[in-house]
Image 1 (cartoon, rainbow, N blue to C red):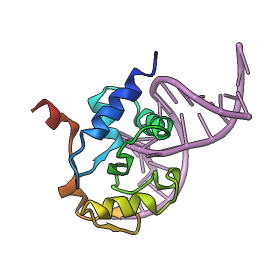
Image 2: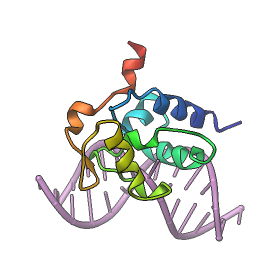
Image 3: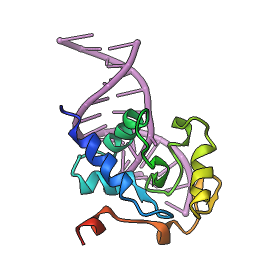
Length: 107
DNA sequence: GAGGTGACGGCGG
DNA sequence: GCCGCCGCCACCT
């Protein structure tokens, strides 16, 4: 089972507080995957059959880069707004404030 | 088995 | 501050 990191990424994503967001790079660094691509890939690989709050995971710019991977490109934004996260032009508003670092799990 | 691609990030120009 | 290139590791063709 070399896909252990998928479960790890999955767990971290599920640990993201509601109304908060994080970045692929932060997760990649936290799990020492070595590449942010692994996080995105893990999400895409895990989406079917798993209820992962992937909509809370954004790129370093705070953009909903993965919205196209959802059932509908708008689903990601709709979900974020449903959690109280304002999204404008496929980008999270107050990204700096809503940003959640996985290292907080250690604290 | 080899090459290309990807839900990204960092660095240079 | 924006645009472009390279690096990263695993998956798909």
